[in-house]
Image (cartoon, rainbow, N blue to C red; front, side, top):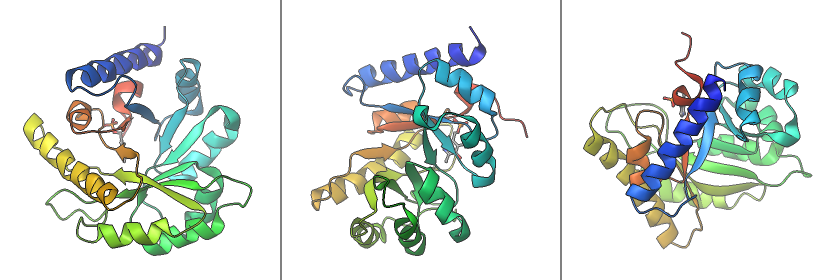
Length: 228
Ligand SMILES: *Cc1c(COP(=O)(O)O)cnc(C)c1O
């Protein structure tokens, strides 16, 4: 077996183990393979093991890979910063966007989603770290933002995403993810029907699963360390 096949088996086992340990239903945590900086061939190796969901951060890098692979076999998720002038291609070619944090971008994605396609699945990126990272909207601004997104007909608000600042201690990791979970539970308590919590990467996926993640975004543990 290739490394990628072995790694995918290991990561699936890690997910199953964490589901069990933290009393999550079996199969409740999905796996998004983050393929930024990886070749179409590496993605094909993961597809050969049944992986179908792939995440990309940069449109220019993603497009040649999308062109090289069978569109019917892959579901593409956009997880990077979104420039307004990239909205058309993102709306046309991706099934999901995890990194939405501006209303203007939401409107453009909505307007540019092809009429023949199902609504674009959206996760709002929330800034749950105390540090002043730029990406993500604040928990305070989230409720009004979510209401606005929910009104757009060609996108479908599915949930929330966060990329907390790196933290080596498990309790600290859990605290950050718990803040995102509380945002999610709060919106659902207000009547929204969110079903997706996109949280957890190679280094903190167990903490994310403990706090309710439904989709972990894993790059390094599947494809190895990224070239710099
Ligand atoms: C790169 C990236 C990941 C994957 O991180 P790994 O540590 O390689 O698992 C997940 N989410 C986002 C938004 C990323 O940019």
